[in-house]
Image (cartoon, rainbow, N blue to C red; front, side):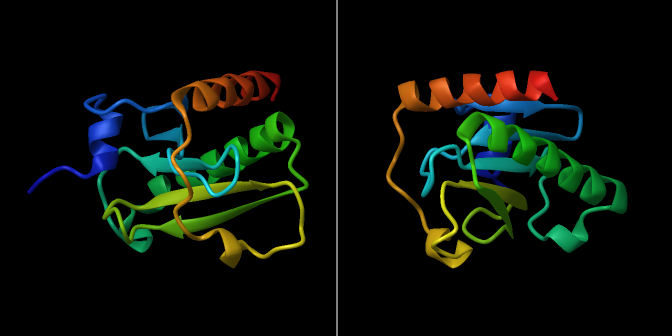
Length: 136
């Protein structure tokens, strides 16, 4: 069976902008964000359905999402940070975190693929998020 694109990213076979990594998961910037700073929290184990994760990994994934969301609040000046759990287009469960600049629209307005962000923009945002993580 072929590896998911996320497993390839985790294995560093495909480049990405990492903002966090531990032994269980990674957080990377979404290459096609609908909002600036959109981040993916991905377990290292390739499982396509969130409720098939073992309890420890499931809990750790959400604790990591909270850590990243708080950093996004600081780094991006978000008014509210939302999340969605996915595993549809890429058969590898992941949490998408959306730092919202306004509360005028609902999360449903952002559950699409945005335009490709430049490596320069992603590198700058990654640095800002990593700095905010260091402040926590």
